Image (cartoon, rainbow, N blue to C red; front, side, top):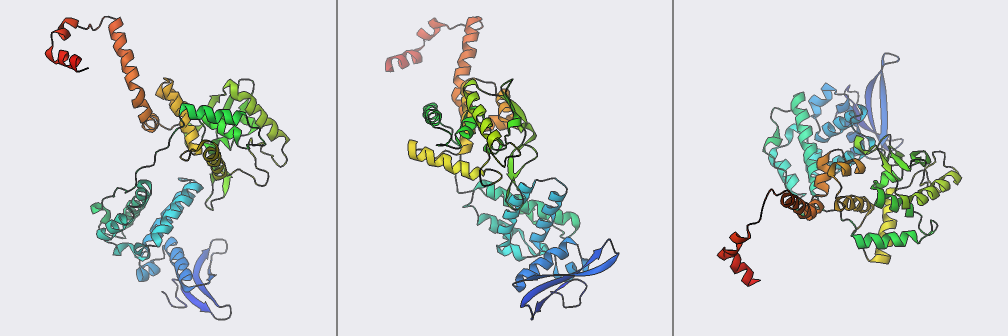
Length: 405
């Protein structure tokens, strides 16, 4: 670490305040002068960590020459740049920041980027195979991106990721289960027999289950999003979180395709009308949110999910369903009804048709035999193919099968 008085910044202990200080120089664009800035911390390590971050962000060549380039600082600096240039949302920033924080806790987290070998990266990735495939993928992507940046900036001469293989998790990929038709009917009957005072999220559950909204989309709805005359619902925003994990109103949906107008089922119309009346009469609800909690600005998705799980476990002995399962239930019923995948894509707000096909591949496979039967019947009706019964009767293998039956 630099000594006191160095132009590259330094850390020192303030005996009077009993705090560790990180001090560095910063150019003031308003006055055109160099200013000394100081920030205090409880521990020396916290002060050093802060100074490393500041010096790397400012790309102080003297500091970097003496202290090297911290691996995690390259990650954090690039992440901050993506946030500042609006390439990622505050929610994405917070999520990736948590991934970087976990990496910082490992032996690699304290190393300079030019000190890390392929074997160390592989060893680290192999050590987290107990985590999910999605988590492993996130860590792998951070490593790949960081070393690519380091190569482009000339921090390293060779990319150690060339010889690294992303391992597969020991965990099975968690699949979202839809309610069966019987389960959906029973749960619907339960909800329709409950007043809003008995089940405050009743209408959220119904909207998800019969219109396919994400829970964050449903919680972002306002009275202005409901077209009563044409019985339509405009979905164009979602509740999300900022970099501090606080719930905020997003400017748009999860994906651009998520912006959509949906027809409101006739049976659901009275319940949405009821929710609109509640919103109109509610105090401190300037945004006219359909689902506004009494003591906070926005409803937390986790609260809705917890209430759903409580109801399903208590009254139906179902433990593997979440709010996202209700949306999945809607999509599954659409497939089972024979709806075209491209229509399902539009209703669900999927960004690409492949998302629809991959999400409901099991359901599509289940019903593909019915569709093939339709084609075969069409062939028969149009006399495109004929069954040669004489040929079958003379076939010894066919006759053997018939005897076995």
